[in-house]
Image 1: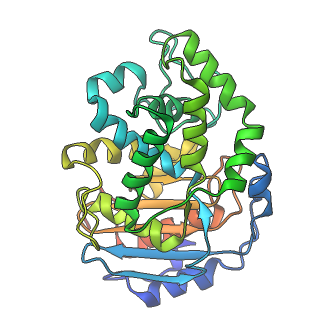
Image 2: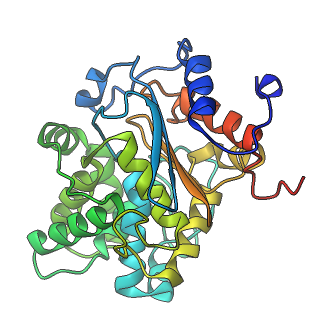
Image 3: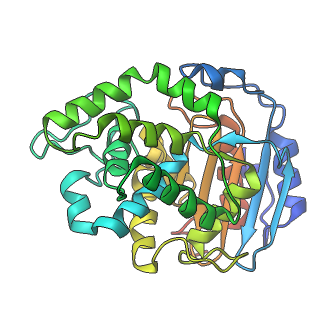
Length: 316
């Protein structure tokens, strides 16, 4: 498909419109159903947004359609844990190795260290959330909400229906938490940490929010619209590195080969991609492939990377 898209000197609204028109008719994939509330999502919802480092956001499609962050939230809580604990403490609890297994694999603990492989799989994300500091559960949630506000440039809210749905059906995540507790990768606050994890996944955004969150990472941790710092600059490289190698689940290798950008997907259908020092990309489309990545999102990002020569190793 990408071979027939003309090269673009820059990303503009015409290019985004072409991509939206091109992939709107795609009917591959299925909406996530293991979280009952997500099964209600409209499979035809589809939007593409790009945010530049001057704070401008351009987009096409259902840009104002709200959806929950799901696994995209893992990126930003990982940054919080880095700031709270530092690299070495975090590395002692959560690794940074990619895995060829599904994101919710029940066995993803390193054979020797007993750490989760990386912070982008569920086990690693739960361990990461466990490390976020705060005296009470409310303190920790408020810190998460403040940090995510700095990324998005506005207050974000938890979708209570999705949170309740995840909390009620999240037996696999509870099993992961108890397994990590056995190996002392997490502390005794299992229920509190799991609630925080489910709440961060249930935060509501639209595609424009996602693009600004991605652009904040592209802008070395400063929201390009508000000027607020969301994460210290020294840790941005950590987030981008883990996103590049682990952000797309067990499709990460092919994503790096085809698209070549740090990225993260979520089972609600969102994908963010970062072009460091230039811009942030967001795509929303709920139907997923077998790995849990948005089908339209993958196609759009590959086409966009090829047309605008965004691959990190493209020097042509």
